[in-house]
Image (cartoon, rainbow, N blue to C red; front, top):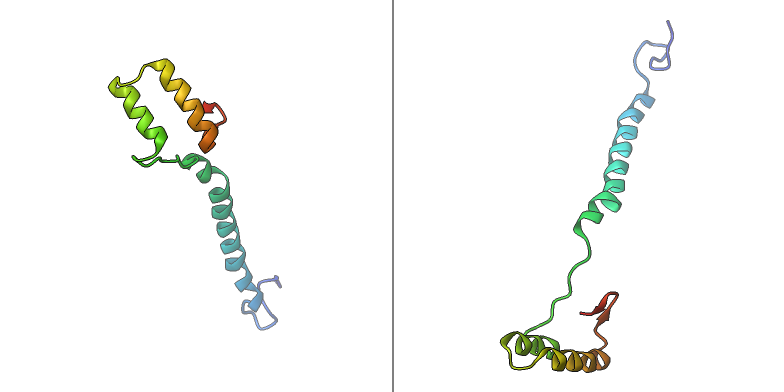
Length: 93
């Protein structure tokens, strides 16, 4: 019986090498698709980190230690946010 995998002499044809290439393309495509969608979603956005000498961090430390009260904290934070533009989607950072 003559099939596509055999030439006239009975051996497999050179096109049989296409099957490993097709499977490699499917595997690489699947890994690429997973990396671009599912795996990237798990990491989430990188948090921004303030250094210890930034004015907002110093203000936070002063409020935490009790040097200033809550009203003064929020008043000064709003001024710093206007100056440094550190407002996020949900309000001040």
